[in-house]
Amino acid sequence: MNTDDFREAWRSAAGDGLAGLCVPSRFGGGGLGAWGTAERVEAFGREHHDLGLVFGVMAHLLACAMPVAEFADDALRAEVLPRLCSGEWIAGNAITEKDAGSDTSKLSTTAVRSGEHYLLNGEKSFVSNATAADVFVVYAVTDPALGYLGISALLVERDSAGVTVGEPLPKLGLAGCPAAVVRFDDCQVPVTSLIGREGAGAAVFRASMRWERTCLFAAYLGAMDRVLGRTVEHARTRRQFGRPIGANQAVSHRLADLKVRVEAARALLYRACAAMDRDEVSDLDVAMAKLAVSEAAVEVGLAAVQIFGAAGYAGDGAVDALLRDAVGSTIFSGTSEIQREIIAKELGL
Image (cartoon, one colour):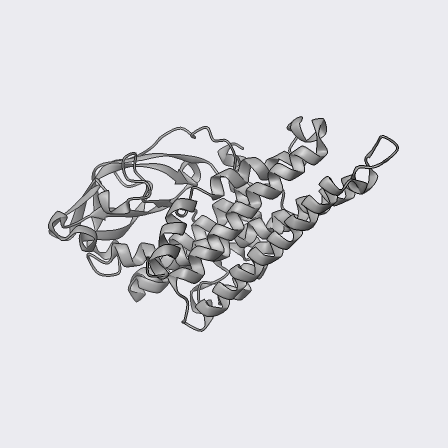
């Protein structure tokens, strides 16, 4: 999808209110809680076959708009959030680096205070929405001596001097969300663009991941419902050796097990969302939800391709797209291994 097509699709999604679902209404958002946001995102994923676009809009909302809504001062909120919610601005989350993926404490991008500006230098990889983005939420080291307490979050406009956006990166899936490398070379960022206080970047990122690991992954629940429904229908109607393939226990039991797995993942995700709305959510709730949904999505995608057989392997996007999109879901927003580490830690191991 080229940039113009992406922007057109983006405007359509923003026009439906999806770019600001959980942003407070006083800033132009929908004012929804986590549960209500997840319900809308699940429907978005069920009805929209391009999970890349769904991912891009949710990365904009949950990893960019919500940090501003929850941590920025009133002046920055008033300036930025109405533009993000309306779709006038597209945002990209810039935290991942070549040598700092899961280990976000090892960022090499720096922001050095100089008067009323920070001088930003570094390179971010796999920045979602990058080629179409108008603004970035950038995480950088402001005090190397303080470790994770020395990381800060900054809002950086794309047209700022020193910002260079690379070409779209090739990806296995989520083709509808352009990702690219973004470089910052002596980029001057006003101190007023700080999201939260200096050194609060780790807390900002952790909060954004709670939103992303729950509400964004609701899109995969919708996509799994759609693909599983198509696969069940195929098993009913596709005949081999004189009977529907769904009459074979190997097929019917696999689909039954997948239905249970999807519903269990749904229960974990909405339990986490309900806890968020009560301000009682734990890292355990979020990690279990993210792990369950992402790994179920891979299993549903793989089963759909195998049950459709040659038609699934043909790669026309009818069912294989979920498998390609789902593989990434076990990597971004914290890998499955990271989620298991969090769960183990919460269990006291």
